[in-house]
Length: 146
Image 1 (tube, rainbow, N blue to C red):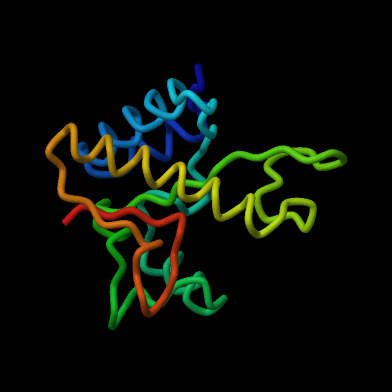
Image 2: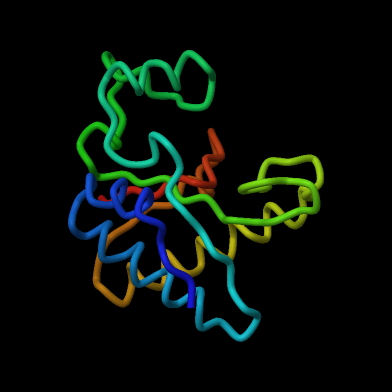
């Protein structure tokens, strides 16, 4: 059964209680999938963010919210980024964004996580949105409560 590391648990603790419940149930759901599911974790800046942290991500082009004029759900604790954990030969740590992982395998991993997250939200009665469904900006790691 997959388990969150202490680092991921610390990041999860910074977000809204509904998100905490959803992500914990989602990991259990992923662990029990007939295909083995996908392990996942919470990356740096994946939980609660300050305006300054949000602005840095905006400047890097990985977010559409600047943290000031356009705040992010992360700044309220109502968003969480979840990254599938994949391994590849010669890579120490998560290989999800390595060129050793095919785009197809990466997308499949994000979709498996999304299925688990959205199933968990549904079971718990939490209204949730997945950034992977956005038309204007695909943000596959991003989940937010509405």
